Image: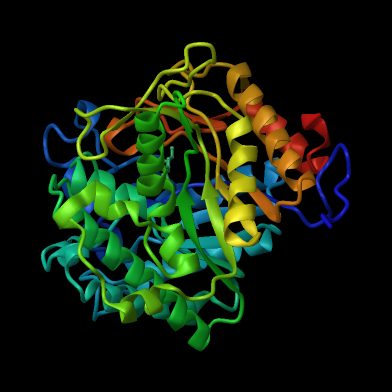
Length: 452
Ligand code: FCB
């Protein structure tokens, strides 16, 4: 029996917060003895990022973290999801620990706690230390040990203050964009590498969970991006294409973590490039985790397309619905569907929505005190209701993090896409609240009631 969920608000204890990631907001990537990351190298390679923008300054959060926390407090955030830059802690990725790197996150965590905001940390949000890329990065089998070494250092220092940990953020992006299509760091385009990167990322996840069980006392999970796939028609080839797309994006990572196996479609998609993995590796990957972190933005309607490499599947634009600046369809029902899919397929694990949000154009300069962003407010309202629908249908959703606290460096799209509920003027670093920030503050204060 699903537990009773209040009709017009969220259950007691539901956790509300905002999310960011290190390379996207911090700036000062090499400060205080930090090593470079693959994203530093990628963004400093001309032609990789729109307008050749980099994370050198970003939101200057590395220096403005105190006033940024004051803003979080003003919004009444209960939790803040940030990521730790591996190369600040271990400039060479392994071996020598940099105390100044640990010091930055220690100050951040302590101040969050002092303001009553629960810190939640992601260990890897794509910024692999460049020194490890020089050793083959995620193609090197040792990467699982490297990650566990780093994770262990961070757990030992912060587990007394951090109660929710995530190992990897969206490994799909690293493998697919980073090694298959070359649109994200490290920028490879190689069908033989992507499966290896996938497998080593998942081995690293497993190793970091094992390390956590040895020393940690709280909760750890994996963050995946899921974009539900709906077939464009009931034709057999469209249905098969939809199944491949779903396997490649939505099941490639969650399935080995929760069920100890990869989808059988991986071989269909990658052919010879998808090896038979040792059973012992799958066992290591298949560690009990405490929650699934779900990043949800949009859905895709999929059709068969023999030209689309290597999936032979392509999305069909749904012109009847609005789209964000990313070209992503606004489809809140997909969030309900995804939460129920996780519930039914994987035995109703606890889920945190670790990211949800939308890029819409704001004026570059924000003059007034508050910037109106009605499309983003609407996006949040409808998606928060979609989460509530899933709760009422029995999904075990524990919290919701808006992406993002601040406008920031949107990876290969540079600063051209604004996801923040707080506007950032990149010339002056002035922060201006958007209406979505005050809406979200009201959501938190009313435990979701204002969304109805
Ligand atoms: C997700 C990433 C996050 C951000 C949003 C828009 O894929 O985890 O860093 O870029 O998309």
